[in-house]
Image (cartoon, rainbow, N blue to C red; front, side, top):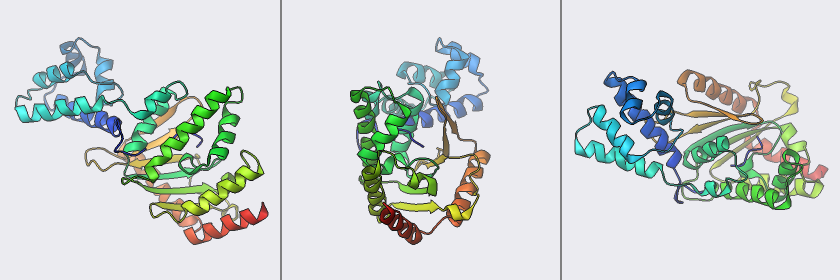
Length: 293
């Protein structure tokens, strides 16, 4: 997954999660009162589809709209109203990544916000070293592959964005990060021979990181459980927020949060971990690849 992926203590950290949390709570309140999306939309001078997007956490919230919806849903207790209105204010804080809007598509801004707030990341990569583990030189090679006509400034901004995402692994709130790379990802020399050597050395270094579980799915295994390709499962500390599966496409992405579907991806990740090299054997393979270079 070549996507462009800071610590949760920075301004904007967690705003995406708060939007999703607020949206899900508003949906539960609406359904418990038997109010349709159409009626809810009418009460705030909005469409039914706007209510749907609000409940999915895909749009920002106006405090006045949230207050009107709470009144419609019969929420009169001041402490509960204050808590939800406070959540609306926090959800509208702009994340650091919005300053990269010129090189960051809207559908991927959602992912960066979720990644920033996650307490656990489990991912399978096929073609690239994961963005959170890439060196600058390797990342530049990946960016140039996907954006061959980009200006030097645009390439530099895309690479800088990727480096900033990596701060989550150095912060106090480092998520548990489990990554399985297909062996092919370690044999494709993005950025040239020297860049690939530096990338393999970075992977060896990060394999000792206490928050990183780094594995390789070797060619010798043959097939593997992830027949549909790369994916990421994001887990969150908030009990009200379900795990989310992220699937990247060429010009968009899918975000899956239905529990039965997420569970299938979790089972596949478990199988990948069982079938891949152990962390120790992964380090041995990395050293072998370095010797080949």
